[in-house]
Image (cartoon, rainbow, N blue to C red; front, side, top):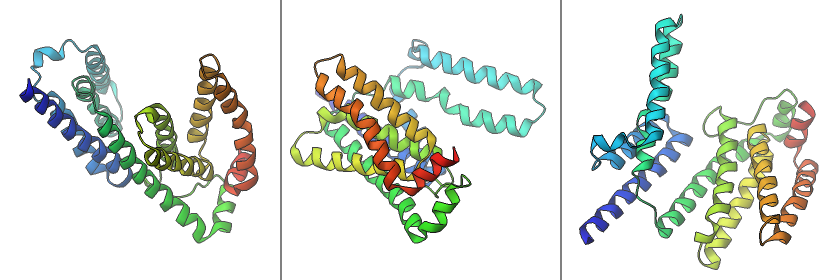
Length: 258
């Protein structure tokens, strides 16, 4: 039993490193993303017999989806584009299995994950903000013609804003795991900074995701035991948006353009 527990702990530690590698690769290096993704999958299934894979319905659905897309190449008139799209879907042959056989993370691992990703996202946000501050007038004018600020990952403001919004949502979900006043203060500060970043970048995907979550979360809390908190969240939404519109010229120009 002790050996199995140690083995599971080792497996989850390797998985945590791979997940952080995937996130770092997402921001800084697509090659690192691919390598970390592959290692994450191999780590999860290294002690699982192949016959067990057939019990995973999500893997079977992913397998069928990739197979259908692969077969469609027989009728494709653009083999190059078909090959590119097929390559982006190949992770579905491995990732459903990887998540299915991944041991549960401990509270300490979740806290380490949260702080690590927060640091990476703040570096990404700092990169964008520093470019904006280098010539704010120019970039504000660029927003009038829908030219967005440079981001990490490069030239991908949609995924950058979405990652920040999803991380804020993750922090709300993982908040009970953030033990201690200092931990909560650090995580709460990171969330606040990333919310500001989402509004400065003003990409529609991140903004819509963030406010849809706030609306759904507020309604959920209002029907539960935390009615006052739920009402506060719902009331805060237009207030935050109004203040952001008045304070952030990029967001204002984005709304004017839309």
